Image (tube, rainbow, N blue to C red; front, side):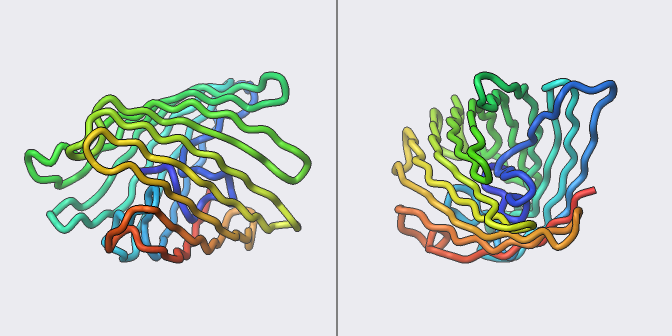
Length: 226
């Protein structure tokens, strides 16, 4: 679930998802490939607290963007991978960056009847204040992961670049579910761009819900973009 993607946040807190570029004559295409010590989504491990390999491609043109992203997962039931397909539109208005889009989550090898796959709609806004960026986003799904149907996630996030190549970023969000318990998740990380295409990050994750896969944890990640 590409919303909190630990190893790419210093290049644009992904996460999430792609960010559209200014109008141009032809599409801009970017690829990413990385590894994380644990794939964490909204405070919960998606890889049974093990390492995950991740990668994707983003395409942007005149505010429109789309892409695909995949990660290895381990739910203990034979599910092998998650594939996210997403698209949307981003624009500048009144000093804010506004972003609306949707993401489809697919799961390779999921057993029959698990109902893992779902679609989520997103609206987000952010604004720069010097070296600091503040933002907020809301995500809604009419048929969420597993047993849950309607689900809403509201998040506030921030990032600051205290020095060249360094980024400190964090987020706190509330997940509302119609079957499972509601909970709050948060994260805080430090990233360093070793080169223009290679970045490393260490991020702390926590959640208010008890469980072996939602314990506080520190995740390390390495990502290459090209």
